Image (tube, rainbow, N blue to C red; front, top):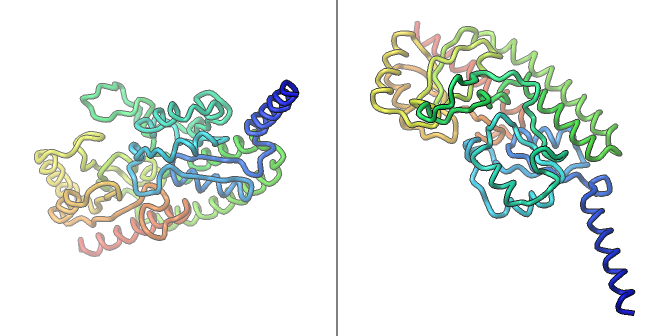
Amino acid sequence: MKSKFYRYLAAAIVAATALAASPAHAAKVRVVATLTDLADFVREVGGDHVEVFSLATGVEDTHGVPMKPSFVPLMNRADLLVHAGFGLEHAFLPALLEASKNPRIQYGKAGYVDCSPGVAPLGVPKSTDHSQGDVHPYGNPHYMLDPVLAKIAIGHISDALVETAPQYQADFTRNRDAYLAKLDAKIAEWLKLAQPLKGLKFVSYHEEWEYFAERFGMKVFGTVELKPGIDPTPRHIEELIAGMKAEHVPIVIREPQFPEKVPKLIAEQTGAKLVKLPIMPGGVPNTGTYIEMIEYNVQTMVKAAKEAHVAAR
């Protein structure tokens, strides 16, 4: 009787393990996304068939999302881990993956979804010497601020969802195509709206706006940081202010995760407009989705550019 019980118990454990490891049988595909824009894309494509959690809330530095113990059980249950790639999440993701011990989402496995393949990176360094700051060896990882490149990430997410839950392929494909059509329509609107930004120079706190600038025809004049991840020195601030005055740079961008004091000082000293722009959905109020965030950024930049033009008259 006892041996028969253990045979039943072993069979039940095997069945439960197989069920847990096969999301095709699950009610929803469980997805952990590192950032809020990626989580938004998963919701748009996955619809009712996904359960999504974002490690970031939108106000953090994308390089340093605080690691919380509560993340580990979520990652243990995840069928997919979606991240931006290019080493953007290098400061927190490897440790979380190691802690999770979830074989489905480890590097090289089907559930490990890198959204960067297909993106041509900007700013690939010639050297990774740490004296140059927090250098990204694969290039600038902030490509998601270009809505055209964001479509590449959406494609990777769609492919991963189909591979994980092929029974929902028709729904995933329909949702993806509808969202891409909506995004394409908005991109056309943004490009038209952004015409006043052509050739505009600006300063940002961190090297996060290169892709955004290239898409909308702007020029990055410099950064508040001395080097990536290194706080500005008084000499750097003085040189930046002098250069901005000489080149008539009209806008300073401050991202929500960075302090306002130095960007505000630079804007006051140069007469530039100081704008606060989110790098992820949720970074400022009323930017809960990716489209809302890009819309906010374009409109805010255009408004600042027009105000700076009037002030310069």
